[in-house]
Length: 177
Image (cartoon, rainbow, N blue to C red):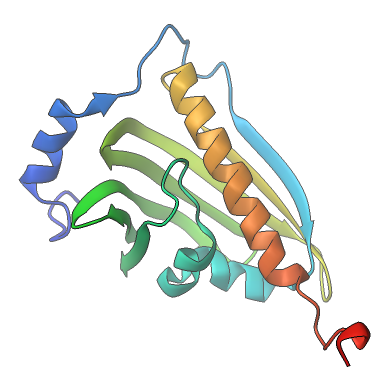
């Protein structure tokens, strides 16, 4: 991640030191979050939803942040996901796309703000064609069981929302006619 990005200011780093950090007796590498799901969309559309800021805002769900406003920004390979509650930023997720291809996306992931989780790694593979695509997600590099649990909740809620976006009926329900 480029430390000179305008959206990553020194106040954020200082705020992270004074906010709640997720820690615990945990051996890094012990656990990763792995998910495989079939989504009714082609790989091209899913790739866009996973990498275009406006689309990320539609499906990413942070645990305990119901009713908050998400905002996503991407500058070259760096990204920022900001979840604001009220007037103050609640959580910032930042990282860099290390690989960004239609069927394989790998990026770093760091959480700062009300919650601080050191950098970890996310890999997403898309397999399939035409009508359905299998999305395989692996998030690894957690430093605590609490961080793993928080991210497990995040990915479960987010993937559920993503699937709902594509599993909506394509046409009007005949019962409503």
